[in-house]
Image (cartoon, rainbow, N blue to C red):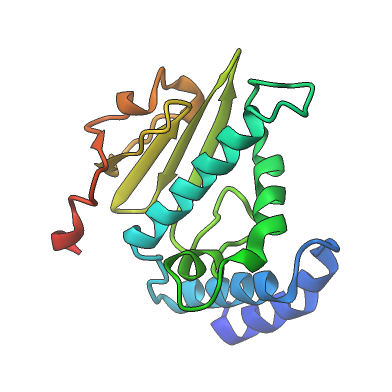
Length: 185
């Protein structure tokens, strides 16, 4: 299917799928991302911005799990609950900031593909944990309840988040104190 035809079809059908919480920007980014992918252009968000998303995701997951006002104190929230928190705080990411760079591209329609070129695998682990894997074709970031971000070159076969005992267990993962692969971009 030609990219222009796909784009027009998406414009016709995507608005019917939006809920009241999802806005025009999310729809526009989703449609444009799909059209660019069909046209063969690389739309992958730079890993340095993806790390910002990972940090914010971890902050939301942890603060939501340890909110003493909830009945589920200590239990990590679902992916849908975390994305609702992103929607609630979207306006706090101001243009010109690093956070705005990834937040303005965050896709609320498909949480398993939250950023252009990145896939998310998230699992809550009983009794009080979670596993998070954000991967592109080249790089992967992992995170868990210990709040340490790990990075790795994306392997051919990704393990599932629910199968990892910890974020550090991801194949060839090293602690991400500064994105080590930046020079290879």
